Image (cartoon, rainbow, N blue to C red; front, side):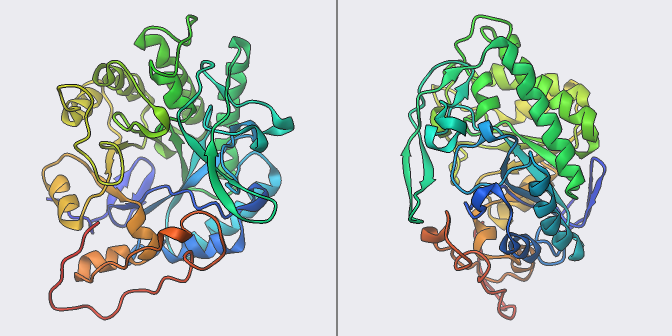
Length: 384
């Protein structure tokens, strides 16, 4: 049976272990440009003997209109490509592997963050009961309510799909080993999927088959550009994040993965439950059936690796691998304070606790100054 520490083939990528660093927004890219500190941050977690077999970058905007938070990086300009190259070179110097998470926030934004103070765009003009993070001119940050969005015009949608394709091409030029499409957590692709945010009555909305179209076309465009074997995709079927809601998520997401199966993707990355460790979250009388979701993908011919996420401990991660319910497991917050997370898991060393007040924005403190593990202890427990 596979272990967290076994190598695995994921699409075109050979990974040294099955521990994935999940994407985490840290708001440390002023003017949407990656910084030298970001190169240090990712390189610290890239050694496959101590850290992640695969790193998924923080969510990275595909265009100025795609932004929804202050100081998050982008991948639409040559300057950004060159800045990201410093990061990917640092990761590869440690023999690591890293993919760029491509992001359009849709309605989860604020007019102050968008070109000319324009409103956010979305499938429909439905205000999200959500907040976003804005850094003021003085340097302090705070969470504020999102702005009222406008509905994308039919003729605008192909241009957004093209922005995903161009950003994917830019990611490869910047040295990334592949890309992950962010279709989770109530952002633009997820907004098209769900009945609560997609109220369109054209070919992009209405029945599930039409609501899935945007996801399918974005993914097909990206996979055609960089290769399915270098393309992954993240979904969060039950997460209510950013006011995401749907009338029938089981049927919706089973249909979605069936549509993705023919694209020969490297992996699907599934957030189970609502985030922060609550994998049992459900709406209505029946829990979401993740086993059925995976089977629907396999039955439709999908061969991509299955990555699961949400509050797994090392023991829980080993269990799902041994039960054959996933090929890899991703960890988010544990990687913030434990750049050597794999080594701590392997050597049964307790995990350091991250400083929540330094999660979003700020300097190097709480970002690149977490120490590596002490000497291995004879016995210990560890939570993921």
